[in-house]
Image (tube, rainbow, N blue to C red):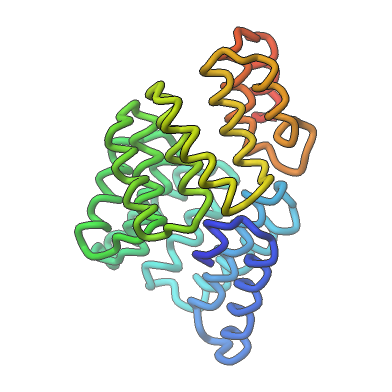
Length: 270
């Protein structure tokens, strides 16, 4: 599952879901096997096109995990996410609080609560939770990625850069970490350093659309409209995912194409 977070390769997610299914089949009363499948289907819904079937399977597995073990902290996290996706925030908050009360030191609970707070825009508190995970020994690359993203959205670019550097120490051959670091360098207007990071990312994953999206942002920062629009190609809608509209709208805005930027944001929200 963690590998998929880095790769976003559908085959990796399929393998993760399959392994959790094996665990479930070996022990049908194992709540965590169902929780893992719920997480897998959540990833499929979020990262692979908002498929209603994936959302349904996410809910079914989270609910089954909770029914098996309602007083386990992790299963309360699952049903909290299920409530989040139907915008029932009161229920989501209640389940998250219960999870924290049941196991306040759980790294899984702390990470997921931090991710939830990040999702609803409470960035300062999300950083607090991710920092607690790091200090408690959970300093994995994905936790640094989550904390760096919050720092970046708050405008604390140096702090974000430091966490992206830690990601690269832990996952030196991961192209996504290089792209994340390059994006922050662009926001800091350190364009040559960003270009170097993108060159490394390209060697790890040639032609990946994410590399192109960051390259478009770099070209826009340098004022090269033609290169920026050309690099955006694979990220332009319509497509199976709207996640890279984050780059598309930023590139348009940097190029002064305000109408296109707003239209793209509205498309993503829809």
